[in-house]
Image (cartoon, rainbow, N blue to C red; front, side, top):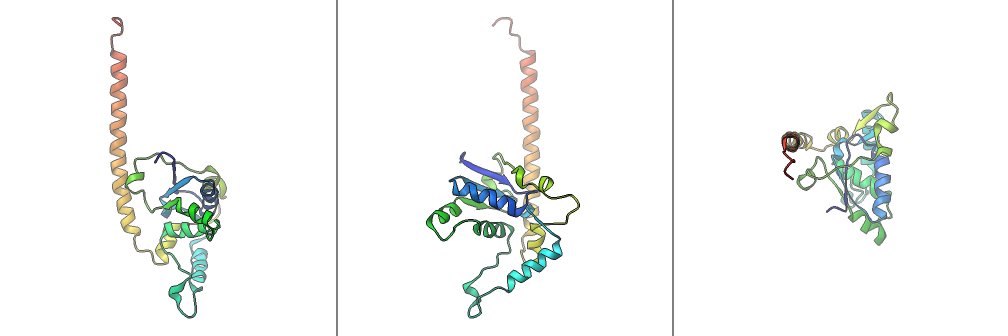
Length: 188
């Protein structure tokens, strides 16, 4: 599990992050993207809703079940945009796509692991501050994803546990430094 790179999607631009992750997947790295509902797309919510509505109109005339499939979940929207950056119809591309995992929120095995950011994909560094942007979770909610409240509730629970763990870790470090400072090393 140590060879897996866990990327915290919050504050990243969707397309820039997807292109960087796609390259890493093709190089053989295993990548997990968490908090995909906090990814960002440039442009206002209205503009992105119109673009998604146009995407929803694209379907098979004879049997729409045959595709194209229009995912509503933020993790699947990210997955699908990243799929377009891979040669997914070849074996190499399919293996690369298999090395990717995307999640809303931060599920159990990854909440206790070190998470990283990709500076070249961060909104604060790549998007001018006066430009409009859309949070992917809001867009997903507008187009029919129904788990916004559930993910928010689970994230709130996770943050409470995380804060308790961090407080205990700080207290333990303070106890250790106090013990080392007061230790009598003259007999050693």
